[in-house]
Structures are given as C-alpha cells and as structure tokens.
Length: 231
Image (cartoon, one colour):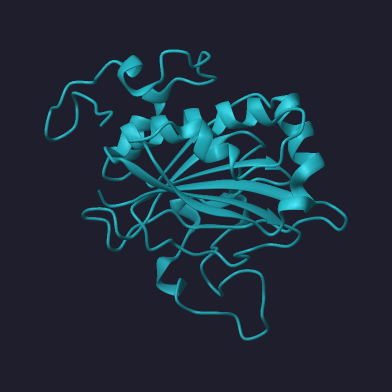
C-alpha cells in the first residue's frame, strides 16, 4: 500500500517500482500525489494530466462499438494486458490505452493494497448520475477521456443535510445541497480524480460530493472507474 510516513500507522513509502511491471513506460504523474486522499479531512484528490492524442483518437473510433461500456474484475495475480485486450476492439491506439489502464490499475491497487480491481469503462451520451451525491464506496478512481469531466462541490459551499433529498421538479441537483454555485469544480480530460466515499474508515458522514456532468448533444463521454475489491 502506498502510504506516507505522516499517516497514523507510520508505514514507510514503498518504491513505486515494486508496483509496476519492469517494462512499463514512465508514468504520466507522480503517484505520491495520491497520498493526500488518506488525510481524514480530504474527500477528493485531483491530479491534472495532459491529454494523450493517441488514446483520445482510439476511443473516438471505438466508443460507440463498446457502448454502453465494459465491466470486469481484473486480477493482479495474472498479467493485466491480456485481461484488457479481451475487452477492447483491436484498432490503432489500443496498445497505448491498454498501457494507460494497466498503469492506473497497478498504482490504484498499490495505493489501496488490493489484488483485484473492479473496472468500468462507461460510454455515456447523457449524465449517468446528474444529481450531487456521495458514493457508498471506499475510495474510487475516475478518469474521463472523452467529454466533460466529473464535477464536485467544495465542502465550504455544501449543505450535507440535503444530500438525501431529491428535487420535486427533477432538477439536476438535490435541493439545498449547493449553497453557492461558485463552489462547483470540474476535472479536465485525463485528470485522475480520487473520490473518498462514505464507506471509507471513519468517513460515514463524509464523502466527496460529486455528479456526472451533462453531455452536449452529439458528443460521447468516456470515463474509467476503478474500485478496490476485497481480497
């Protein structure tokens, strides 16, 4: 598990090389940035990254072929690339995308000390979860490759008392949760977003308040979601 010496159990940080296959290309981000999600008051961690054209082009070509998306449980006890190859259409750019997903799975599994990861690749033409909510999970990783990124609400602009209330007029947000819309933030494409859920230890009344963005007409949103599975 990737941990910081500042955490309560004071476990030393392992070398990242232990978590990555020897032939893996260099990571496009510093995974140690993820450690902030373990701070008790931290509900969300965003790691900006530059878009990769090869991956974007690949997903543009195959998105509608794999719609509404893919779901699988991948195991780190077996090579990841063959598991991913069986899910994705063979086309120029697939290898780059497989390497990308493989890296994210490996780092996420190391972060949460698990051997199996639930993987979802969602292909959306409308918002999947348009109302602000908190996931009933531990820690979830999201990365949007095509279309608008995940939106979240900063804590100072949120009223959690209204999270379980739905607007009577089917509004896109739960009534009362948003104190001020200036607190709404949005990830860019290829950003890594870690969301702490209400099932994380000692976080029953917490969790990142977030929602799926609206997808413009004629566009497709492709988002990867990773969840740690029990070993």
